[in-house]
Length: 392
Image (spheres, rainbow, N blue to C red):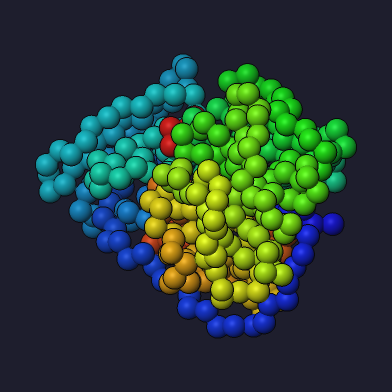
């Protein structure tokens, strides 16, 4: 049985079609040369991790002849590790910083993000984390993974299904669906309290949560009145307001970055397509027409694009379109099941689930070079949700 972030019950047939491939964003990457000294084992680890962070940033690239030269010295301390850094260009100092901490990878990510910001003025994503669901023979885990070789950390385990996690804008909570009580209920895991509590349990589906940008509300899918509809949920009072009123299935909501609109999936014309409505409800506008099946929309942080899953030629792939529904581009081509796209917090990356390597796993793609990296390890992993900037 396949469990995914999709709660649609109807899959419309889609004919094969040729779609224009996604093209690289085309940003000019600043070349950076790296020199790492100090403890021999640490230096190798730091050189590899910082190099990976730089090359996946979409803004910088490692080079033997860089515009900027980064010199890093790493050492062990009684409390962990120390990293002293100096960045220059043509002999002119650009950045000098020292980092200390208990984990060498965290220091590498912190320096990489500082380097991206100092050289480009844009935020880096090396220090961010991705949460996702992992299914094994023992059960289901809500896993949290950093962008380095450290294993994923399970913050929630259950023998019953866990699905559709959504990370809060303040970074402290992940709201998800659990079948622990025999119903698809909404739960909230708090990092500060290291515990999860049930927050909504009405008969039927309580699923597909999506946070508003200010964290003041959640758009959710409920089937309390028979079919699935989109509701607003107050995360403090747990009161709900129904937004869609049709007899069709409405699901998979996602807020625009301004919080004024919601994109969602509906089968009101007989097969699932994407629609946009005001976040207070009201008239919806159809956004897609190129596919016989669309689902799992995700709005980019800059508001210009929407990523989604569509069926083409019998397979499922990730597509990106402009926020007005135009300029449709196909992002994935490998595998047969590519789903659950979610934008990174800077809009330069997308995480998604895929079976491109055989087993279903969580991947990230950097949109400037279209470089793909697998994030998850063993087990069947899916439904990624990206942490906000600043999460530690």
